[in-house]
Image (cartoon, rainbow, N blue to C red; front, side, top):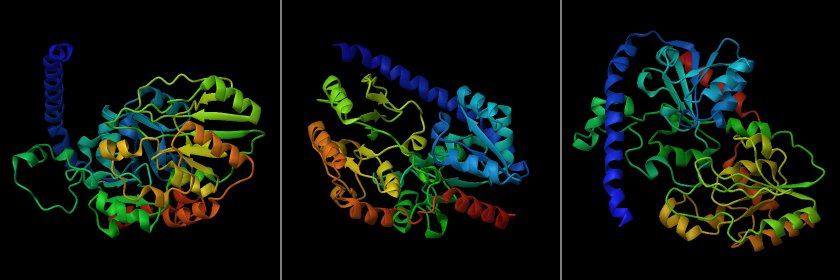
Length: 399
C-alpha cells in the first residue's frame, strides 16, 4: 500500500526533473551557438573530474603536474563544488564554478578540455572545436561505455534518423565524442577502443597520471591493510557482513595492524566501524594513501591494477561475484585470470590470508608481475610527464 501511495509522487518528481533539464538545455542553446565565434587558445587547458563534484583522479594529477612544470599553459579547474574552488584558489591554482561566467568564457576559448569521467565534469554546453581528452578513472575490469550502452558515444557513428536520437540534433552538446582517450597499455587500449567507439589512433598510451604518486613508498612501523571495494549500481550488498569490529580490533592490536577502509564515494551507506585499529580513510583521494598500504583488499575495483605497480600483496574478496555480474556489471575478463591473489568467500578467509602474508607467505608475486606487465606498460612513474608531452604535441599540430 505504501509503495502504491508513493508511486504518483515519484512520477511527479521524475517529470519535474525532466522539465528542469528541458529548461536548462534550451536556455544553453544560444550559448552553444555563440561559442563558435570565440577564438581558441591552445595554451588554455580546462580540467575537471567526477561530474564536477570532486578534486581527484587522473585529472587532478595531470592538472598539478602541468601547472607546476609548464608555466606557459594556463590550467583552469572547473567544478560545481565551492569547497573545491576555495581549496584550489587558496593553494594558488585557478578554479571557477563550472556554470559561472568564467566557466562559460574559459571553456569557450580553451584549446584543450580534459576530464576523467564525462564532459559534464566541466561545462559541456560550450565545448566547441576544443580537443576533448578523457583520462578515464580506471583500467577496465568492468565493462564501460559503448560495451554497456550503445548510445554512450557518437564518435565514428553513422547518423541515425529516429526519435531516439532526435534530442541530439536539438541539443548537440549532449553528444559524447572524445577526440582522445588515454590507456595504460595495449591491452587496456583494446577495451578503450570498443568502449569509446574510437580508432587506435585516438588512444594515447601514457599510463595513468594518478599512479605517479606511488613511486616512493612510505615505510611504516606497523602493517597497514586497506579495504577498497567497488560501487554497486543495482544490487544491495553489505560490505561488512560478519565483520565483527570488536573482535577484529583486538586481533589487529595483537598483530600490530591498522585496518583502513573506503567505500565508493557514491555509496551513501553510513559505515561507522571506527575502532582504535579500524578507521575510514579520511581523504577523498586514496592514491596518496596507497603509498603506505602493505596489503590491499578489494573485489572488482580496478585499483588493484594500479597497486600491482608496487608488487605488494593483494587479497580479493568477491563475496557476491555471481550477483554482481548478473545485476551490476559484466566483466571484460574471466575474474580468476586477471586477479593475482587469493579469492576469499568470507571475512574469516580474508583474515586467514592476512595472517599468512604477515608470516612471510607471498605465493602470488610472479602473478602480480605478469598482470602488471600486461596492464601497465610503464613502470617509471612518469605518466603525467609523458601525457603532457603528448597533449602539447596535439595542441601544436592543431594550430
